[in-house]
Length: 243
Length: 243
DNA sequence: CGATCCGTTGAATTACGTCAATAGACGTGG
DNA sequence: CCACGTCTATTGACGTAATTCAACGGATCG
Image 1 (cartoon, each protein chain N blue to C red):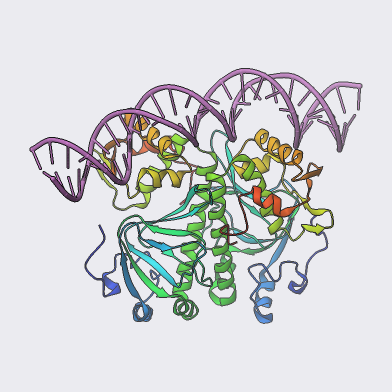
Image 2: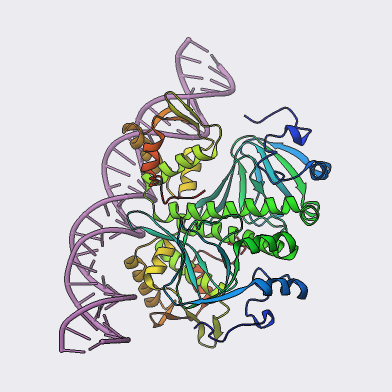
């Protein structure tokens, strides 16, 4: 669920230490605070459209969004799953390259593009943090290319679940295994994996029948043995993704 | 062919205005020049290995390299094609995330990692240029995810050829069409497209039989009508990749 | 209670992969 | 100069994983 209590001070902010502001000192944070605005949008809302103007640089404070492209004939590919601390928009460009859609209620911390570009010039810690985050995103995008290009449907689904657990602090390892909430519909998962919804569903069923996952509800799964699932994802602990 | 004449001054450098140094003024360039070293490696040489130390940040001055990952069972996916001005390595990390292999003779302009990190701190124009390049790479990687995830074998091959023409200044539009030299073997192309070598070959043959490409030699093709090929790549001029 | 949305399951189809043979390009050596 | 081996690319026959088409089931909501 999205936080409904307004966030006023950066010091309270859930992404204070992981977003683009992570390296800022108190003084720099004040500069950011003076130009930031918050915006909360409901699930399903569009946060950007490929080819359209995008005049803000926004960090996700809470919620989840997908970045995707849709071809003329309707085929869609998600190119990134955006979680808290991830950003939308880029300095130096006023037109979005991809569609961005809120998958849950999303709260954004936004900067007007021109103001953010000035910030980048004047605030070295923002620039260095943005570079680090972008390099990490690039590695992640390349890791995902391996999944899209070379993995089987089964491996894709397993890899998706494993990556979601790794990224989501929300994933709670408990006595009975790891509980994971899926912020995506089956269709959104299929678009992320380059599969059809039917194939995705079949793989969920197959993993369930083999005891690798339990389906608590459509959006909630339990992973009894995380390492076993990671092996299905072709991730045997060494040699795999660094991220 | 790789340039065999040694490059001494940055002012002569073929990537002076497109590499990480592009925004530097004369003074900054001198700082770079004082710590740069050149290295030329033959085709087939390894420039980095996933999981191994990588103590330099290098720009490709001439030649072509591929960045890839190989899974334990031998499946390989290329995640990036590196052309002149592209970089290898990243600040803040001493271990390579991917394999990098020279596809032709390659000349590199290298900086020792620690020295480069200092440069990033002291030379704002290097930092801003690196950020811009990394953001562009990220967009390109996401564009490629659409190709890998949602395109047919035919579209993949067409998209590959189109992207090569767009990136390679070497591609010369002439009276008889556009001439394109392929710096990759069929196998390397297949690894880049997430296909087998056989399927890749069949698509080349199909495009040839339909007159969309001519095979001058295995490594040289002529594209009589570039726009026609771009349509096969699902790129109808609007709505497609921004990059 | 029907309508709608979302996910699952089944059957038929197909695009791509696998296995295998062949052909061309190139170099070496007799 | 031709025989031979190697390497790369092409082509054919066949198998299969994933898609497509279609029906169905379980929620949720008016």
